[in-house]
Length: 176
Ligand code: PNS
Image (cartoon, rainbow, N blue to C red):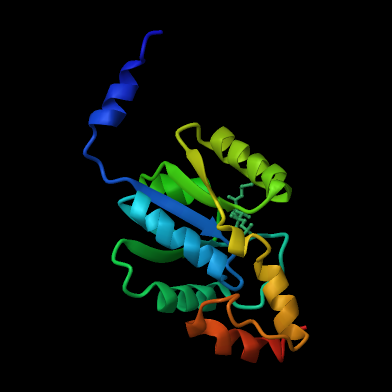
């Protein structure tokens, strides 16, 4: 087997490895935070990117979600938080980034995530998606489930970071 020359370029490169962690984050959960912390240990820099998912209604505005995530990741030196209203691949081109990280919970996530990874790679063939297995303790956790529990008056302690619990509970009282 002949190793193509670009492999050597990658191996020898001193370029900073920036990974984009995209999502709706409406709201951020402890599962998201776990992926950010583990991602930050694996890559030089993580950009948590709040994007618009046209299929989902938002409890928080994009700006509010960025503010909540920034509050939580404050202190993680190689983690930045940004938002973008457009295609993920366009943002990545502007940042000169090629790596997407996503958390995979269970088999049920696979089809959706697989489709998005292939679509992003079709839109820009330089882009690779790296999947990180969600920790078992967070495997049942989703932003939608958190919203539902909060709206119906259940406790969300342990489901979202402590620093944003009050914001989610408060908003859930007015969100239908
Ligand atoms: O947390 P989510 O809702 O599963 O994240 C989905 C998200 C926001 C990453 C996805 O909808 C997205 O990438 N939106 C931006 C628009 C885009 O680039 N779409 C093409 C990929 S299918």
